[in-house]
Length: 467
Image (tube, rainbow, N blue to C red; front, side, top):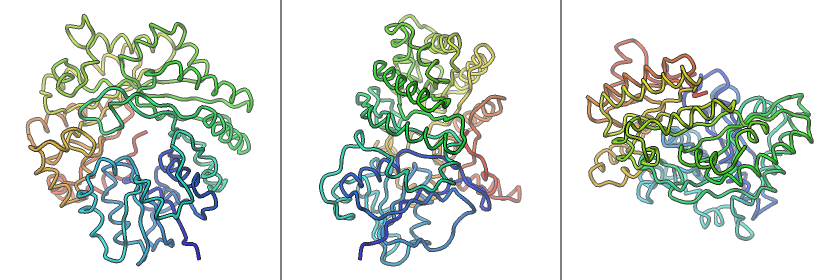
């Protein structure tokens, strides 16, 4: 008898126990399942998003359980699911970008010893997947597979809730830059999906939306640097336009971008911004991530510095102002609190963001740098292995690596840098149009602080979703 397979999107870390969590149609899990289906179309499986309804605590009724590990902060949640809810003898397949950033030894130390009666394997390893699911041949590349067969497993009530909210949509991956603190797929040229598959998927979603009476779809593109391949971006915009015409539906989308490739695209492709805006492009988030040339050089982000840019911020101002002039909302991604930041550089970052918000309506999206995190350069540095070991031995501390979390003794051992980082981060989060709600790290210092106030870190963080 074929084993029962269930793929799970874990509940949001900060969900209120008796309410819906953060309901959000996410591409990574869907694409991973679609690849498996490409090699075994007849696989009998079910999808479960634990953000629907109250928090679940019972045993998971499946023989093979695929868990989408959203990022480092979700490592504690995955461990608790395996420890408390997986039935004896079941197998767990852990996937997600963060898994690739862990060494085999780190993966084993975190997950293999949780239960003697449950095997946990790396779901990003194609050979492991072939063995686990008895695949009938090689899986198709992720750029070629369609998510539609996976979406068809989602009932209409849940799909309607998904499509009433902004969702993430996989368009491309890869970034030619190699910022040291970044844990994403970097240092390689952007690679687009097959755009015929993209059109098929968007038409499916638009058709479902229309059938539900939904008048507008909103999504943000997976592109790490949306203007790195402008020709492909314009092709994608044409597809969006054709879907809008075919289904009579409004579509809005946004993306991330580096200053360098955004300005280059605007210079070399006349009319690109009006074309995108007419297709439904509403916002671009620029990775500013600091405010001085010294900090940018230290984190591998020298491309933020203009050729004649003595102060370091003119290139940022140029990109932000061009966006605003073309009716596109600029968003400032300010990941700061880097090891080389100072009180002065952090204050400069705050002043800059406030100025851009006042002058151009830029939306602040602040986050705290977590430079010792799987995937970032510092994770493998010899001088940081004490902190890495502390995290592996105390996996609940991984929550403190959430970019929305305040700086902690884990992420920022230097007390002075920690103090100033939190001061300016909280000030930025207090701005009226900011797109980030800060959360508290689940570490000893903050546990003690919450206990003095008669509460807990978990309780205070409930309901604090980013956007």
